[in-house]
Image (tube, rainbow, N blue to C red; front, side, top):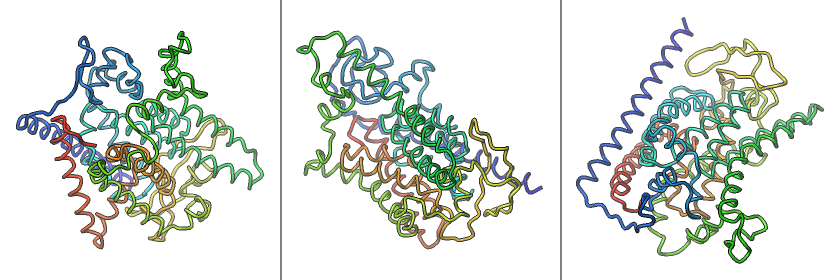
Length: 447
């Protein structure tokens, strides 16, 4: 009876989430059409190549690549996964939306072990401040689908499948390579445990190979660019980056054409862009500080000071064990559940469909659990890059696929003590949906 009720509750929540997801995209589409019909577009694009598309916005460049291929040096930072899907399916990026919401909710349930908090986080994600980019021909939705999907498979025990999803995220956006941090974190902890237990440290080799596999698509695409642009030319004809010791086309284009580099964006004239990114960066800083204050021991020890009880519930990233012991009953917010597992296999990871919490300590549950720590480290690294190296206004959509932001927002909204902050976050999401549909649809600068 309990299992049936739990299954019905889960199905109802998934249906509600899908409805919210569809409604949020229809809302964005409606607002885009409305603003476009009311305002005169401000399009200052110059003609590039008459036979093909000529606008220079990112979405038009993706369409141009689909139609014409990689014609110019400047087009190579736009990785090939989205053009491939456009060419293959001839559909918009609405397609990944439903599986993305379902996968994001599943990841939240596994990590937070709180269905209500996970449900709130998924709804916030439906109306995230970068919503306009999830409803147009940009790579954000595909990247989010494959990066969050990779996390789901990693936490479920299917590490090799997770690596494949992470590799696909790297085919959508270059920052997909940073997802290798999850594998490095898992490998570090598993290698330590293997050494402590005097077992073979094969996990180091496995982790290294998995990181290589994740980076391989991006490296292969750089090699493809080198072959197209540099191969067959004399030294005098070669572009400057072709002559480098490590000829990285992506880094050259980012620096040469777009001025991307450490502190290069710290100019007084860029102050409006820093203000535009300030809400998302403030949310990031608050989420990190909140976690750091509650779990300082994890930051000091890089996650090694995790209690045995927490380690058993977070076995996927902290331990060699692929699951908790069979037939163990654990307590969650919705009651007691049985956890079933298959026998461990030395050849492949074991898939576990449910993970439950064992910690009875409120300060170590939900957003403040040890499971969240690797995501906080990943978010910290991403935010540092966005603030000091990238064009800072891109931070809104660059960080929009980071789960801890939504988990932190969910914890604030679900807490009567912090209800005002919850309202502020909801207002921020609503304001940026309105602002994004207004500006981007009429060719004005927006993130």
